[in-house]
Image 1 (cartoon, helix red, strand yellow):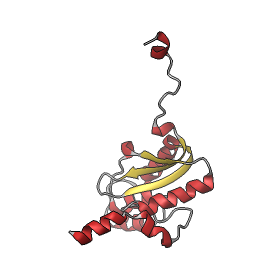
Image 2: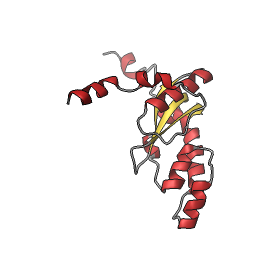
Image 3: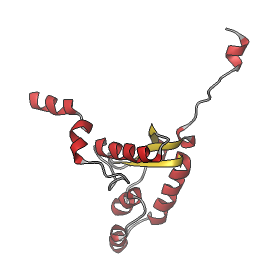
Image 4: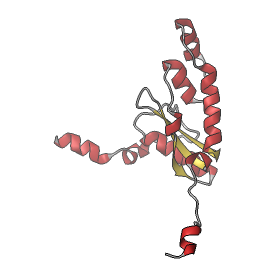
Length: 149
């Protein structure tokens, strides 16, 4: 080993919260659902926005407050999930699932990830993916294993 090998690191590791132009996944702590989203800005900034909106609707709900929260349309499906079920989001486990620089392509990737993720909080993404693609996006081998079992 040379001194240059020890001192020079051409690429530093970039944490997910510093990455931009991404499709991301944020899980729920109380159930198996995840939220799939996309942003051109850094993931850390987008999560701050999600947290701010979620914090504005969280707290101990009375029945009347819960009914009001369920009937209110929030900006994000993640906020709807928290408000309607009084669940907690696992912000620390948010991950980048795809990186796409082109905004239109990122919307399509978001739609694909929403469709192929078994349990999501999402209503739909910006791009409306045709249901024709469902067969290709689901695990075909899982269906054949169930039939043979």
